[in-house]
Length: 359
Picture 1 (cartoon, rainbow, N blue to C red):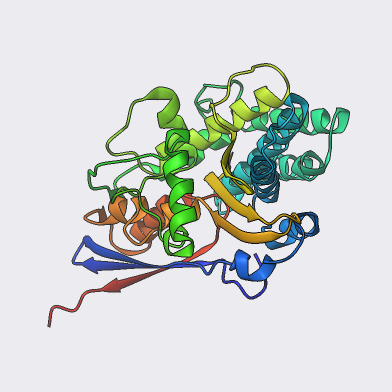
Picture 2 (cartoon, rainbow, N blue to C red):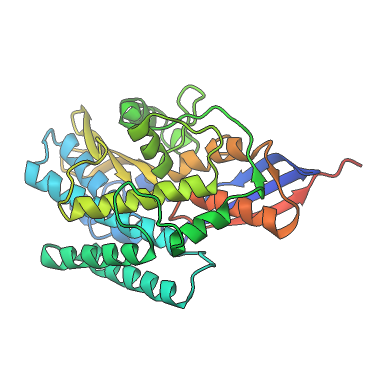
């Protein structure tokens, strides 16, 4: 994000005795794209977007270009669409791997070296094509095998570093409340983009769909594939979903499978000079909506990132935590922190705990 934007989310957990009574979220600040870019030619934004949106920059670029094409009344060629999808998937793999290893406290020396090799390969993956990208994916898969992942749908091998890490997240440190769950999908795209166009930042800063504030991201994608919603999924189950997706993305990039979720990139023409696009990135579903004048300059530019759903003040994280029972002390705080981390592999947050004073 731009230097003037605050990209960290402040979360305060309020406890009444052992129970989490409430969760307060101070959202990050978002750049006012229309004010920043109104009157500027479309072409001038292409070099700016990667600096403005450092997390998931390939996804933002794919969303922007697809929205512009829709505004022009054009469709991407099959070759262009495939290139964009591949870039988005490569970036998704990079971000999910980074989120997997950051904060992993149980890495021994050998596992830490394996993780470093995987992360080094992602630096090639994000900028490479053809043989260089293939070599990077091969190195990542080799690293995953060393950590205990040897197939697309397999749980980590017993006794492996990943299995040990997952086991450390289970237990009684956090007893989650049972809540109604809702998940964002491509079926919601038109409702979302029409609200973006109608209401602008008033919607995009705190989105809802007729009171529904769905979750988006890895867990939503898993539910979309399996159509089974575990009622008490905690940090371990969510991390395992991330691990499974990482293995699936490797297999797709290597050509060992052609199966991924539908709607990775979708575009929508909204009228003359108006278009929108949705991209399924690491964090979830990302939206851009754009309006252009006759000279191909920006009149309006709106975006909605997955973070605004997952960390909404009445959103899925708040619903999941409210009424839950964390253990006392550091163990319970770590369990809450692990759950928060499972909602977004990219965006940083601060987490504080407060006691409600009944006096």
